[in-house]
Image (cartoon, rainbow, N blue to C red; front, top):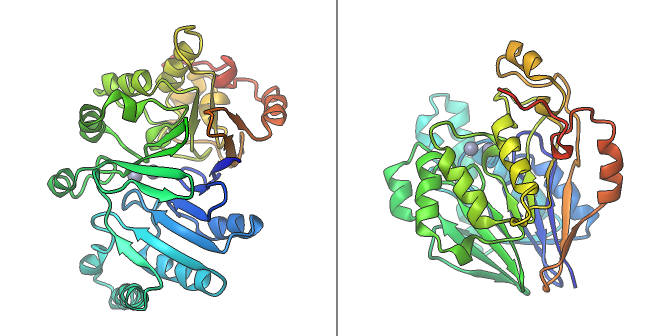
Length: 336
Ligand SMILES: [Zn+2]
Ligand SMILES: [Zn+2]
């Protein structure tokens, strides 16, 4: 029996599909509804047990009217359980001065409420302490945020990101959305080592580095002590991701025999694996001109014993020989 976790290649965004053994699908973030729909159709899934939206940014949560359309489309063929919406998910209702836009938003909220009345779905807010939620043999623990912390920082969506720990027997993975700055520090202070240690970690915020907060990301990597680090990052991102300092940190862990890290993988190739440090200096924060998959969709197959493998990893190794400066092969120019 295998748990399948797919980190879909959706550019500089997150979309994760979890297929527990002998159960339906659980989805984390849907920035591109069609991608998720196609993936689930391919896997012959007609039930989405749960969708967790980690925070109110468009690279994780679509606009409320696009979300409504996605759910309406899904209901034509399938069913849905719970939808976890973050604080502020519908706040743009008040912000929209455009009356057509405001109508669309109101219509979407009316639909969500109607579906709830008809018991077609349930909308909930997520916070640390609720759950765990069980889907067949897997348990999903909500480790962050605390409700009171999100109230204190309503406009700092990354810092109040939902963090999920997925457990299947001895296997666990930590999904850290875009957690950064004070949020990351608060999260680390709240969590026990047992809650953090995992085989697979999804690095927060698409390979950003956290200036003035470096201790936090190092502490995160030390305490999670992962065997694999996954980066969902887009080639064309305009933020300079993946930050060379982050690759440097991961390489140091990879070469340390006392650490478990075996590898780190990215959904797409970024400028850090293509350009020299000198070239990057002339580019500002801009990325590559075209999207270029590295692994593409990263699919992890895990067993309850804790053993796991990445699907198509041999093909990926082969592909890496063509990436002259691949950071995971220690060929990147990481000087800054
Ligand atoms: Zn993001
Ligand atoms: Zn974000």
